[in-house]
Length: 107
Image (cartoon, rainbow, N blue to C red; front, side, top):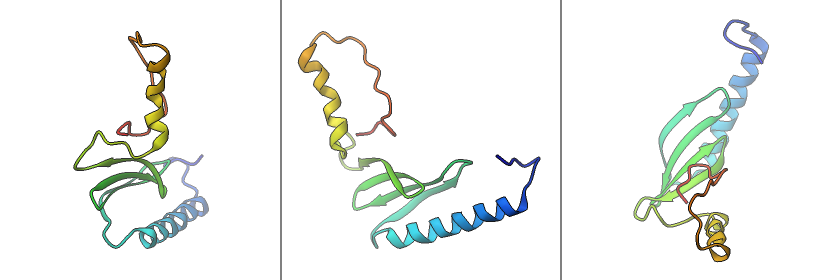
């Protein structure tokens, strides 16, 4: 992996080209009503926060990592996260739970 100390121009240009292609593709795939409210680049991802018709979405490289309703933040948007509560059907005395891999944890 290159760093600022070991700058590799061909590798750096490939990252720039990839980022430009990803941004153009993502912008083309956004609905007309969608609005990008935050954009950032990390060493690992192109990060977008998008508002579209009352839904806020966190996107890494064009994927939907997590979503939340701006009007009702407790409403779920991914079915699998609603299934996490099934553990209470078998053990109603659960005192502590660690849920890993929830993305933003908003659904």
